[in-house]
Amino acid sequence: MSISKVPFFLALLVFFTSCDGQVSIEFNSKKDKSQSQLIASGKKVKRVDVGPVIFFEDNKGNLWLANDKLYRFDGKQLVRFSEEDGLPGERIIRIDEDQNGALYINRIEGVMKFDENVFEELEVNERKRNSDWRLEPGDLWFIVDFGENQVYRSDGKWLYPLSFSNHPLESQFADAFANPSFSPFGVYSILVDDNGFPWFGTAAAGACRYDGKSFTWILEENVMEFNEGSAPGVRSMLEDRNGNFWFNNDILHRYRMEDNNYIALAGIDTTQYTKMPFSFMSIAQAGNGDLWMTTYTEGVWLYDGENLIHYPIQKDGDDLELYSIFADSNGEVWLGTHKEGVYRFDGYTFQSFTIE
Image 1 (cartoon, helix red, strand yellow):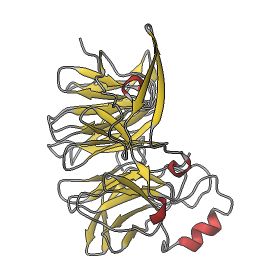
Image 2 (cartoon, helix red, strand yellow):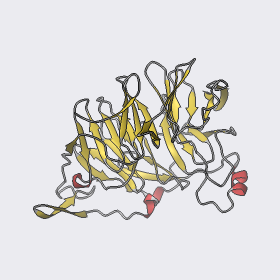
Image 3 (cartoon, rainbow, N blue to C red):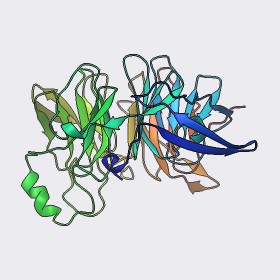
Image 4 (cartoon, rainbow, N blue to C red):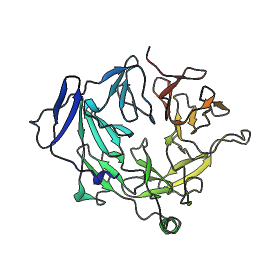
């Protein structure tokens, strides 16, 4: 499912069928601006459809929610963008924004730029494969495929495919993953820290920071995984307001960077909470400093710096399958599920999110 295996055309013809018949729509390419563009108007809806949900807040304060469709919530209206707007119906795994306010929609099968209400596919620059590791102002970073040792750097025009090499424990991983079904270096998550340095959370090789010259890997047992079977992976990363870094699969520790080295510090003390898992699906920090953590089926946990509070997330007595958690700039805490749409915290519990 690598993006590099997906063909890109200078002009892509897509057909949609509606009650008025079949409509032919030509998408504009980078090299032929004379062709017509499909203007994405979206559709007002009351709730988010089923599917693993992620979140992103743009610089205007709009909340974007995504599964295999894209949703914009401006605080009043929820607008859905889908195939009829030019967005392929594929799972969305990451959203980012450039300095000009254009959005980038990272799917398993590619990356689309959403600018001035038009979706445009970014093309892969194969001529610079693995040769263009650099860090420029305004660079964007994207996930290719969870199972592949590859990541994309983008200048907003092209995707530059890059792979990881020279991991300090590369030989050990080669022995542990002799016949891997996935690469231990497959990227699960990306974080750009306050200094502009990208962090990459991997399937089993831990997490690393790239400063434009070199990589610093977090070589801790709780963050890495040498078992070729299922591994939680670094699916979520957080830089807290004190400049410490947290990883979803190791809440017992937080990490501080000093130059090109890291220091492992004590994280959350769970000794009095024997039923609390040590690994989570997603982690976020609210404006007041509270840490919110979501499990797969064991609800949500809140850490206020001293106490841990558990919020079971159920429907009809059954635990829901959770996927992500997000705290926006307005103090709202959002929860994305696998099959039940989106929930929002009301100050006491999480309630299903629906526009009245």
